Image 1 (cartoon, rainbow, N blue to C red):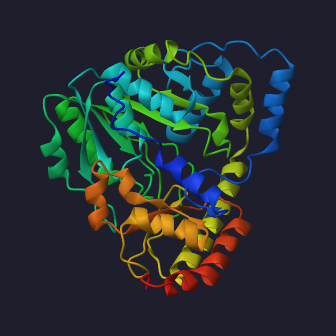
Image 2: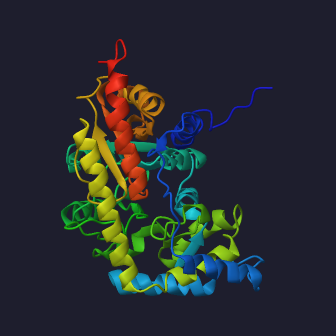
Image 3: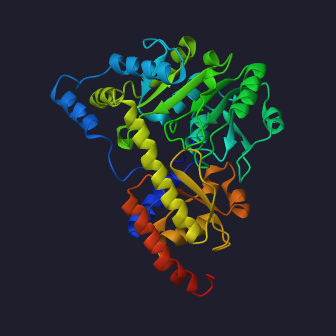
Length: 396
């Protein structure tokens, strides 16, 4: 029996494939973006207490009231953005679900969603589920800039949404105020809703600064601001994400959430209430620790022939490897995992036409959300195994 499905164009995620390959070859996994350490114990203890207490039944579909109040308070404190906790803050099972529900709630068959490429892989999948069409505009290295004329040319009368990911995965770009002003003007001229993916908002490295586009004049009520507790508190497996949006937009994105996931895990939401009560010193130390990790991996990669620009945000480094081997990035990533014992991610998979991107790109992504010892082990393997692997016939 043949089933026709809009999912035929999709297969297993590259993140799953590379993690499986890393496990098979006992490689240091710098491919998938999850920490090899946990967040603060106080968050775990709050969730454990919630399980032992009375937080084991359905939460309200929109999220625990106390969590939404804490989220609204932090958004006001950090960015000066005021949202009503009851009607304009929604808790989802991760930022990915929030993105899916936002696109599903706002788009129908034939509508268009516009974003920059490279892009996180859930954007085309969410667009396909809505029956909509994803259109892309390139970010061009090494600074990952874009041409506003390219963006304007991509907008049609069917364009409904612009997805903006800043800090940007996989490039580490933080969109500047100038970038955001241009995008805001376009959104208002073309009556677009902007969905922002800001899950790395706390992973910003000096002198970069994160500015939510919702702060710009005229943008609050046409922006769905999506973020997550996963990266900020190193609990990626908890999948507690959230969205801030105008009341009318919130009503639209809550509908698909209500009829699919319905609500996120109640005790884990309670745990994140405790996370949001951590003082400012937590965030200062968080960024300091990640700056150390970033600088450590940058030094290791540069020492072994990679060309890398220091990311302004996220916990990823995009590295050019053409001085090591001039082969497609899928081949290089598999070779690194199998022969060197260090797993990375081919950047071509973040493009709409991955096959075409492989012909020109020589870029892989490394995650530095790891213990310093893990990064040092990756450096040791590069030092010992990379020369051996390159010495094999046909690999120089």
